[in-house]
Length: 81
Image (cartoon, rainbow, N blue to C red; front, side):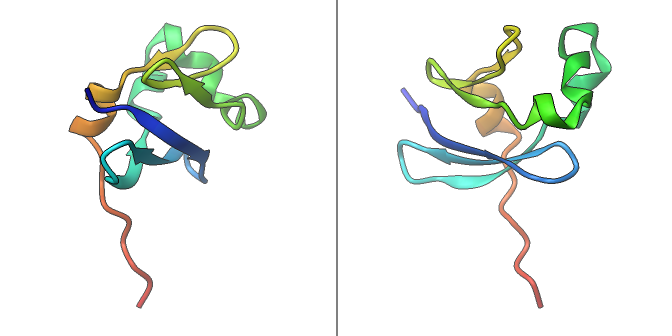
């Protein structure tokens, strides 16, 4: 099973994510913030409290995203030109 082994908050509600198989990329959390369950993530200070949670990522008040959801929407970072 694929696991998130590294997560770092970025600007504009993005997460830099590293998986156990070496895959890396950027995950956009902003579409999820539309739901009441994730509304608290609008607060930038709270958003930055993201941590590894089981095989995915989570926040102190129980909001979490699993590895399958993250992997399905993971984008490769665009390199600067």
